[in-house]
Length: 475
Image (cartoon, rainbow, N blue to C red):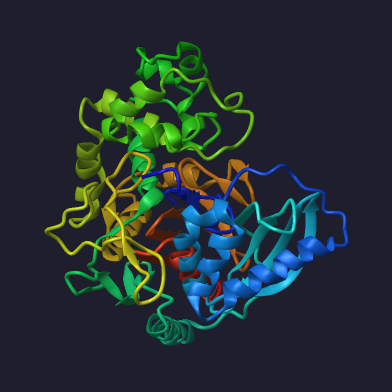
């Protein structure tokens, strides 16, 4: 994946890069904490917000595209992503706004078509050009009335049908209680060129949801005594280039994203992508760099950390990590459609970005890594949930350890390879995945599990998953 990928993981949203909520938006960037003190927006910022929102909400998608091209040129590379957000959300309803920096205004917004809330941060140094437009996640406020099971299923069937007809949902969804699948459906196109419709057996790129498999495989080795959570990286990769880092970063820190090991995507990756195909390639390429922060001192979502876990899997087992997945997870769980490769010969969804009948653009298929990017179906992921909860993959004690909140991560917590969050007051664990043309969400509640996979970018699956999760019965 490229530097625009969002391996979801934390926060209010969900994958490859933003973890559901790790970042929670199509385009996000690190920000210094802003003062929350109320400030009257300078007229120039207030004007920019009004102009931007008017263009974004215009029914003619070309209006927003021309707005960006003319008034926000630095955002041009991402305009297709923004248009996809516009189509998926139905536009934004402004809830409130506040100045959060000398040249920055933050708007809290709600999707017109869904329940989801988010933030949009505009940066402007003058009246002629917008310097940046950034989408980020925002915690939901208030509560949504929970329904009985039959009413939830009826509401989902109606809502998803309406959204699919409006072009705002393109993917597959599954709701289960225990081993029983209560609802599953596919909507939209998996492949426009082949006129292939989405079904519940369509394979989608799952982005960072693939980190679930890496985490389970690592914990299986921990159960067998072949790994220890406190083991330093150097114990299993003694030839790692940065020896000082390898002696400080532990397996647990890699699982909890507290190792400071950083990302793999960015300009360096883009310039060398052709030579960075395997786990070993990536470890050679990034193995000399220093940590972003002192290992164990804080949380920071790390795709490279899971590449290192994949390298550990390979070193300890003596097998490629893909073979480990098939032998230890996909086979025992009964997941025949799940793999790391795109497999054009099978019913696999093509990732799309952009919006509108003529604006959709097919993207090149992604290939998997231990950090995510493989392919699965809603049916296979439900089989994974059943196997995980039944003890077929790890023991009950290990699963409890994996799902215990260990690290605060934004508005969420992180366990051993799993995100632990709440929706409308109900706790769940799982993982999201996101990249251009990719969005997925797996949520495991006390009684229920939901899986949503889409071949559109964030927040296509997240909005749908939140709609379901906020209404499921509890207790």
